[in-house]
Length: 377
View 1 (cartoon, helix red, strand yellow):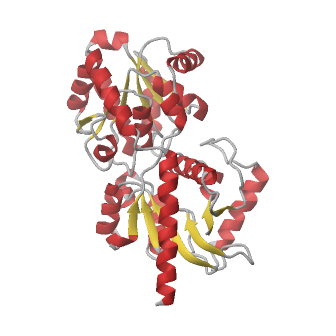
View 2 (cartoon, rainbow, N blue to C red):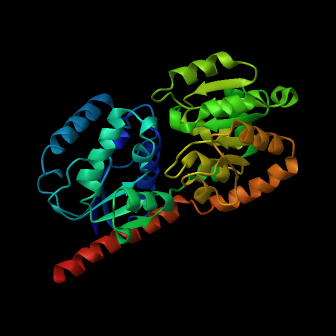
View 3 (cartoon, rainbow, N blue to C red):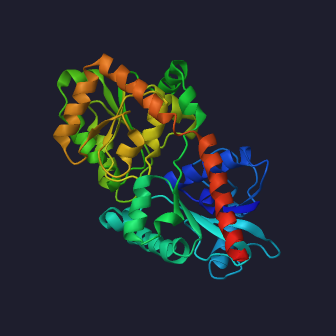
């Protein structure tokens, strides 16, 4: 089977989609001995992941993004003379190619439909274009959670038998992160006290202000013992939240963007991970924290109960008091934290990239098999 996957999101500044695509492609490359895998635009073996920059140097990045713009205006799409069994489109693609048998794509979330107020007009327009021009026309789709699959069926009217659920994986480094690695990262980042951790791009949907309010309401003795550490680059509509972080003091530490290599150690060293997001298609930071064996609090909405299973305490993300109470409960009970950490690690074993890759290859083979049966019919 010859498959081409569009990798152009790796050339732009991004967080969730870029992380998924990078690790998904690496896992497919590691397990593709029976298949011929090409990453457009001829990326080959993947270098290190950097959310803030392209994985390629400046000039190749500019060139390939210009090529993408041209191809999005045509129907040729793939390089002249190329022919693939399957083409998997990213969310930057706007036209499906002609010279391929089967087209597929990944659905991450439908939050621009369910929570448009949490997005820019540009993001909403881009998602709608992707849905109309790619998702609606693709032969088969991957949804990263059952919640996303159900949203796609209800909102986009996608036939249920056209969508397969394949969860993200978590990099092995989170499963393998050790106390020594956590201590090394803490020294590097000058984290001198035990800490509660939040990590994500700072934007309205991540609901960081509620966490800041809840931390402010903790008992003084808890705030004197545990810092609140926030890691993540600033996203859209985040200026007021970022300014609040910078002037908070009193136990709040804003680290900004933390290099990918430091994230497993930073996560492993947390006493508690808190992720009160208002909507997630999957919630990779949540799964990563569970893989590192960190007791976790997250939201009882969208995909988060599905991903967390019994490995996290679930709260109403709009309730400051409920979040404060859950944090207090865990911070005061080492035995409860230990019990929850064991459950979190057990749940995270479902999210291994090698499992995701194996399910993805099965997905592509079934998609091509359906095409072959249809052609004979």
